[in-house]
Length: 312
Image 1 (tube, helix red, strand yellow):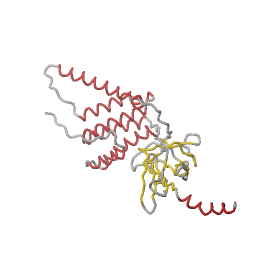
Image 2 (cartoon, one colour):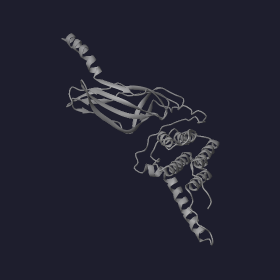
Image 3 (tube, helix red, strand yellow):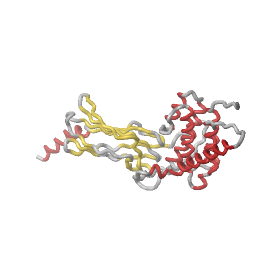
Image 4 (cartoon, one colour):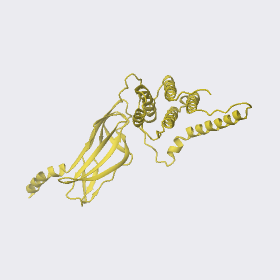
């Protein structure tokens, strides 16, 4: 009797194993690059009950091969972009498909543990997925600092964004109040003709104020780059009538190309935004000379893209 059970299991095993598939769209990524992982399960009919509990925001992974840039430990988290999606595919057989869009900020080789899915009141395990993350390639003719990225979990705090960005909101408010008092003082001077400050002047003033504050000397390097990215995106958004505050660096590059900017100008914009991303997300620590270089490049972008001004 036992031999018959064993033979039955051997016959059925290939069908059980092949009924679920785990795969990744791209197995080798650069830091910050996005890819998609898929989980597929063949069903007997579209009425089959399928229950899958997706991860939210982060997926813990095992470290297969360590890299000198990785922090110590045997686990690392990858970031989920957007929401988990699932659907049914109707072909020769009905297939359930679930997918995540992910990105990673550590380099090395990792393995996503096998998740489980409940199908027809039975628990089915998918296969683990392995992938590699390599450093970002250098842009030709540009210098990017090597980083030592450490990915940290985002705290579960409803006011986290407000708390982490409060300083630059206060800075903008102070600048606005100073600007308001300056306009009032200027308007009261006898015989003085009022002149509206142009977008170019406002932006250059904001960059100069940020540079003079020297936040990096106060241990606020990340805040400096967040503000620099905000100033540049705000200027380009107003200048070309676009909403760039919610756009990624890559999306901003595409939009600027569509607006007819030269290749050199677009590459310089991308360099500034990518270095800001490296400091914000990958914990890059540039030297003061590189920080001032980025400020100079931002002023150059404003000068190159501003319309000509004539004194009347």
